[in-house]
Amino acid sequence: MNSLKVYSMASDPIYIGTGGYTIGRVDNTIVRDPITRLPKIPGSSFAGTMRFYSTLKLQSAFKEGYRKDPNSRREKDINELFDKPEDWMKYEGNRWSLMKCAGQDDKPNEYYEDLEKMNATKSGHCSHCIVCKTFGYSKDNKSQQGIAFFSDLNIIFFPVYTRKGVMWITSKQLLEFAGIILRDIESPQGEQVFVISRKDEKNTINLGWLNLPYITKNYPIEDELQEDIKKYIQNKIVLVPDDLISHIINSNLEVRTSVSIDPLTGAARDKALFTSEAIPRGTIFYGDIRLMERPVSNDMPGLSLVEAMIKDASKYYESFGIGGMVTRGFGRMKVFI
Image 1 (tube, rainbow, N blue to C red):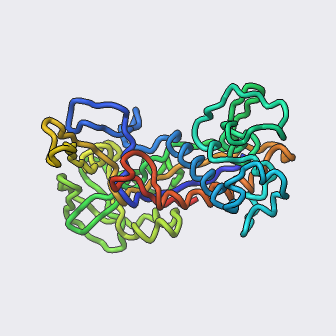
Image 2: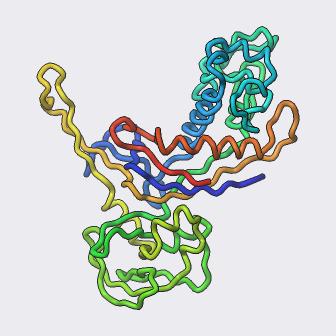
């Protein structure tokens, strides 16, 4: 089994709702880990959008003429279907793929007796392309578990406004959850926090509405991170106690108030005011994608092809995002695999 480490940084606020309303600080709450009470991006959301973007990348690579007549692509060698062929796109089963391979199968009970006679425009999941093989499918005559397994994307560094500018808070426990285990690193106790810096200072720092004493520590936390992430938070990390991290994060989420507009008057509709919370821009997440090793054959793509597809598809998160309200300025993030 191969494991791909994933880091991501929110370019916009990210809203993944719980599917209902609650009585409290906000009306529309976001998904949280039931143990730590920290907001997260569920693995199901990550896998679902990755499947859609993988299919979108594959379909956009087909020539316009072949997209208009899906059956014609079966009459050509797969290498002839692309202007600029990439290795993972040349997987033989891709000739059967359609946009329906993204999302839920709308024809799960269809039986494939003869592949060549299959109606590609009405088949639901084709069950033969690299997307179906990677993310799984279920048909009446055959079902197959996917190759890729997605974890939740959990917060590892959270941006908070301070007198020293924006700082990214974390805790020893969050670092260990992310696999960053450093020797001789201690966790701050009580209300004291550590500012990770090369300057020796001792003062107080405000983390949102909290004003806490701090001392500087020269821990090599940044050295464990990718350069893409490191350049944003270098010399701007604050290590807080494990029992304070959840309170600070939940107190500094973005809360946005919205109102419904009456289409007849163009003014705010009466009793239509609601508030939503979101994970703020600049938050850094970590997770992993595990790829199951299976025998490479004409029926299964190799893990190198699957890895290449996922890396190509991850670029779409910078444009189309993840979660809800993406048309209203939410959801975009940079994904580093």
